[in-house]
Image (cartoon, rainbow over all chains, first blue to last red; front, side, top):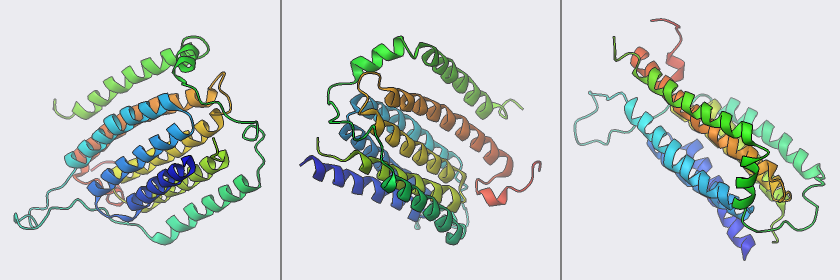
Length: 174
Length: 102
């Protein structure tokens, strides 16, 4: 049962990732990316990471993807010659040559596949993983062992917030 | 549970390759950004697959939490830069930006 759900999520994730790769419409790609990120969140749940699945949905789907769709909308050059209120105004992207993309990505994948199939990971063969909630452990770890990275991450987010607004608004003042 | 953890690593490898293909193939700057997000997600999947066998310290899950934080900051800054580039060059197709100053 769990395996069927797992394979469904894998098909869902990889299928929508391939759709992002194949489609030429940038807005469709953004929506397929949404499906991919949701599928990855499901895989996180199946790997026993409940807290990270929820944060994946909140950060990526709720934050990054909305930001990306805003970016697509704001950088869209309206083609006034084409816009006559009857045709849909698609936001398209061009492709470079397929040869290099397939060569590099296929090469990387075949190398990784060989390494993963041949490799014998000691940690993964170490008995059954336990499935209890990770929220408690993550909270304790963030306040003890990872306190300094946690604080630095807060400062980083503040700097990114100020930096993004400064960069995005800098030409308005001129 | 009966899921083989090695399958998570294979899915992560496939997702990483698809993200890399998107980065190489597409000419739209925001599409390249989407490819980078996919690659970061693939790496997170790997970290979490290893982390489920480490329930006491959960180092993989915490690492991927920090990866997510950095990815969010990176997306915000990158989109601000893309917005500025669009105002400057009036395009976001990467191959058409071939000058430092125009």
